[in-house]
Image (cartoon, rainbow, N blue to C red; front, side, top):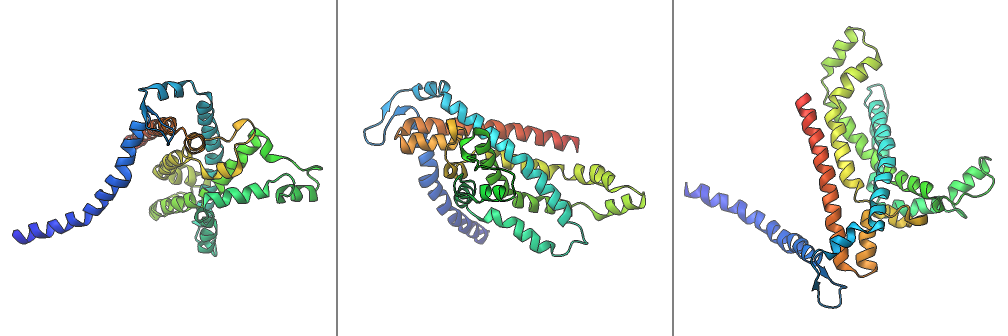
Length: 293
């Protein structure tokens, strides 16, 4: 009995470093930033307590609400083609007769390895209106006569940012969908083939219903990640009239460019609440899906 108690203590010793590091580098900054959100602090002078003044200011901040709208628009523009392309490629590469499918899976996953900053710089060079390869290609085939200033249009700049996000994550979602497809019992497809079901019937009556939990997982993770867009939009600029200014970008500019750390802390907690609300809504749909199953 004593030996079992001594052995259980070793596990405690192994997890103590994590909790200590989380307390020092995680929980303490979180609590301190919450305190800063109720103060006025520029990083140089001592914090002055102002109560809910930062949150009151936030409720009347048109730039913050614009950043929320931009974030949601870019997320919607990226998630729809992202999931459609990932699902289509997953169903194709899951077929047995496809040769070299492991190679193509690795190739399609490769953009996910590249950092968002690198992708942002790459797309900014591609869509540069003077020297960009996209304009040169379109002019060479005769689709346009003059260079298009892509990043000077609000909707085109948002589409470019959405394209960066879509291109980065479709490979990851494709692998998730492939894992979900391979978890479907083969006997169901064999029974459908015996009954003479068409490919469309198999896809709509077997594949898609059984793939619903995987679709829900990718949707939830894309919401959490999509509301934290920062790297790629930052590299591509704010766009005309701040059309690509996201919530985290606004937090970065407020705190680390304008040195208004207290208001930046308030923005951070507002972003946290927004992500929490969307996550709770997603969890509600997830529970409804489990009840249906």
